[in-house]
Image 1 (cartoon, rainbow, N blue to C red):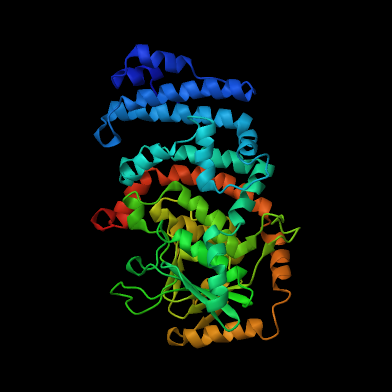
Image 2: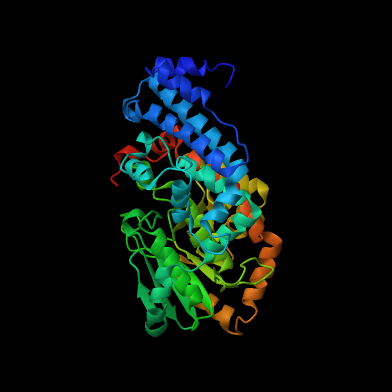
Length: 467
């Protein structure tokens, strides 16, 4: 409690919550004993009582100041209890959910399995579904509890590394479509295509209405396309490209990506788990390759299938698009293209750019880009720190063909080994795990912050845009 915060009983009383209900909850705040069964029961009772109190308040859009303060108090105390419980039991919970690290569970299933194992620890599927139908500003942010859970799991070295392994495994959809890709050399997944041309497997990201933005409709299929490109045995190198877009200013032109779909974000159509799935799945696979259940993906053990990746940047790479460039082996950019990381104007953390951008630009430019929104024109001194080659906008196809030829003319037999050796010095998997432990908690808070809504309305005119 801060010096200026009124006593908790007063906060709850002013919101109309009777003392006979609020008092037992305030008195029930448990401390972890170390005994899992005992703690599960004690903390579970505390969380149930808190949820019951919050359910007596009006929905968030109809709360007055006193009711909003009470809801905030209930949520904060519940989250403090989750931190306490997980500090004692996160590793044990993860082992229980994975049969003592013998099975792999992706994060989108793990959080709900944990909610069933320890009721109240994380929101149920029904609770998340209820909030998913609301605009972002009208959500209580129950998914923040998923962030607390994942942060604690990732902070545990054994559990966190195992979870990283799980997210590097190929998606079932990719394994199902791989024979088709091997035979036909192309698979159209809607928001992404994978096509083999000569020695290159090319993934094209497509969301033309939203300038190739990333959202819930694109993530799974784009990760599947990346799996196909990496696992394709008939190609030696992979290419990431953006498709043509429909925006009047850019119609008929390719752009790489405009990052997260801010319109969908504002309207509550992007879940918290989207960020975790993206960076631990799609982006990490571009950087580290695709794992198998039988081999440790840590660089020291070489347990992934991987290829060099080339990115072609037409138009721009904004936000998440710029983040993708930081895991590429070679970046070809059009002379009129630019890069930005508008995290400051969005109110979120730009994926793993905080971990990676400084390796390319140095810390000062990285801070300017992340904290102050500096634009990096690709054909500039700062832009060339990220981009390897600049080509005229109307000659990108020929330039890309040249890059592929230069990469593959002598074979790429040592490419995977060199990539692993570079990563071992730059960002070993355990460093990524530790970063994601911080990111999981902080991004959850950012995703539900009132500042995010204010930023989107101020800088994006979000309330006027149709989802």
